[in-house]
Length: 122
Image (cartoon, rainbow, N blue to C red):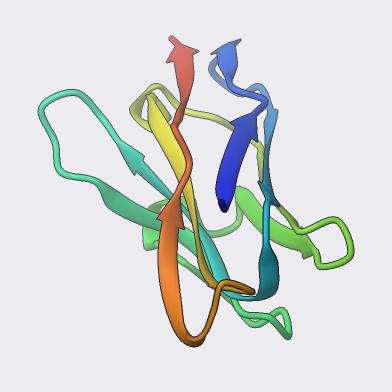
């Protein structure tokens, strides 16, 4: 069984920083893309940042220059360093990953974490 577990959310004042982590565990053969998404109350889930297995990254425009996505392949972990946080960054943040498990090497499935709350006060 594969699972993603996020940590690092919390309450921070505007201008502050947080670092999110997401660790994959289970019967994992390989991990392809990993990413972070967020969903604010009353809004659709949106892409925040993604990284490929060879560390090519992509960001949504609203976080460019403030957020940095990185990954540690040996630890099967993806991080999101969030600086200069704004109230509009308040949301539940979810990580996801494209994972091939040992139980079925012929397909890659997308897995999601349970989400971690980030609240930025003005």
